[in-house]
Length: 238
Image 1 (tube, one colour):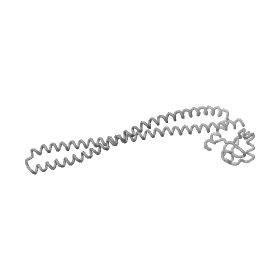
Image 2 (cartoon, rainbow, N blue to C red):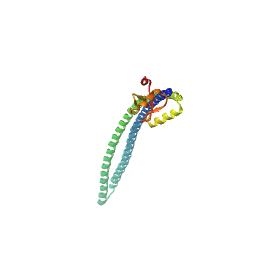
Image 3 (cartoon, rainbow, N blue to C red):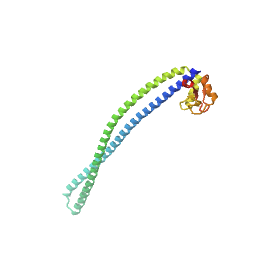
Image 4 (cartoon, one colour):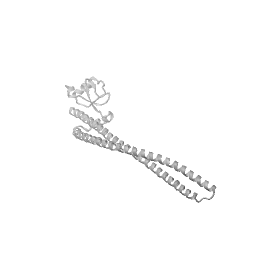
């Protein structure tokens, strides 16, 4: 039984090490995902500005078409004005020309505003694309670093998994079942040391008779407080 308890403690050490490596790997993968999300967000901002630019350019083209229409109206009216023979009709055409010229002034002002807005958006897009290029370079470097670290962790996990498999082979199924259940119930820690009369899992004092039984190591003994399996390490036994 002593050998089984020692193997169980070693299994606990391996599992905790694997847990730590898995947690670190998950954190690294989360960091990589966050980097990708940051890139996606930057690209979305550029896409949104491009849509805004397209709307501004479409508005500008519509205004320019209206401007051209008004200019054509003036040319037509002025040409027609030369053929007018009555004062009343002349005044009516003159009013149309004046209204068209006022409309042209307003359209030109609106077009100028669109031109300025387009220039501003183009400048912002250029800045965002420059920032995106720099960000892509940084993200690539960081992701490469993350990948190397993940590969190193995978190597460590694989090595520990092989040790775990060898360790598990020597343990009875009943003990393994109990160990797995306790791992699930006690946040991954099923086996703990007993030292100086205390359980190091919950830091509670153990009954003296139970503590003395641990020195014999002839049975699986659990802490009456936290129910974890108790072991005595060689240094403590001495």
